[in-house]
Length: 123
Length: 252
Image 1: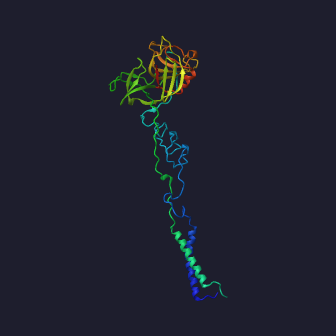
Image 2: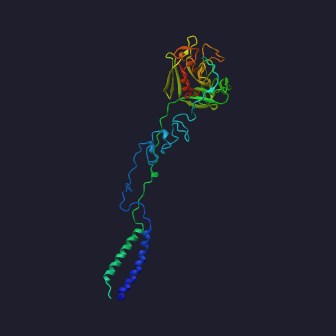
Image 3: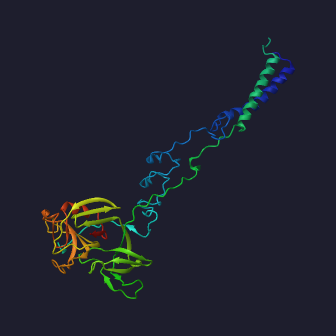
């Protein structure tokens, strides 16, 4: 191919510059895309996800950990992480099993089993 | 041979390549908008509601050792010492009806009915009993209440006119299994803290009154006993599963 010296020099320069610019572009293409949308951001709700729904079902609190309201059922502490196990009710350990406002030194009484004996009551 | 590639075409291509490279370089530099995320754990902690306390039950003192009973708080020596168990072997349980700091006033299972004494709080374990028994002598019925709610109502036999069932506030001090549903006392008998006002001795005992089953169900509803309260056997078995030692018993 017959090219004049000027054009040949230009082509050589462009080839060198092109190689230098294309290499980083290829590396960039292999870089994982960053998370999140690219574009204008809603400051009030940056990732534009739906707000968590209120939890009406106490048993659903485990699967809805953002549930802001404590469940009403004191016995539901295991499935409702927002319930404090020490907050009362006969909740068993790790709480003390006491309701608020009651003497913490008084434990609920177990039902004693009858013992085998011959009664001598007044009959 | 001439090439179709003209100088102008070459310059346009080079310019486009440079523009594309600059655009890609800008993206690589991280100039895309940042996207803060809502972390679930970042939500403020939920407010905790305290559940409403349940009904206040009776306080019962339990002791596994001999228990000193004093006439007044702070007395230097006890007025009496109650053994760790009853004469039948039941664990010692005393119904508490007064509190003076380190001292508790207990209803005693001794004559006369209604006796009280003071025990040291440090000597006992306090338990809450939410059950209560009410006996209506005129209606000849017994009711079991749990947390103030009636869960059992049943007819009973009561003391005959010459051996009346004493009235007052007592509590369960014994729960005995006879081992025989056809026993005079039925399968189960509760000993109470009260005693007969007429009988100082009965069947080898000291006239302690009780609540028990019977081998004479036809007597239920009548005033025929020596002061005890008789129930149908299936009912006393039901109560045996619900009533702890120390359960208050009001007979009126």
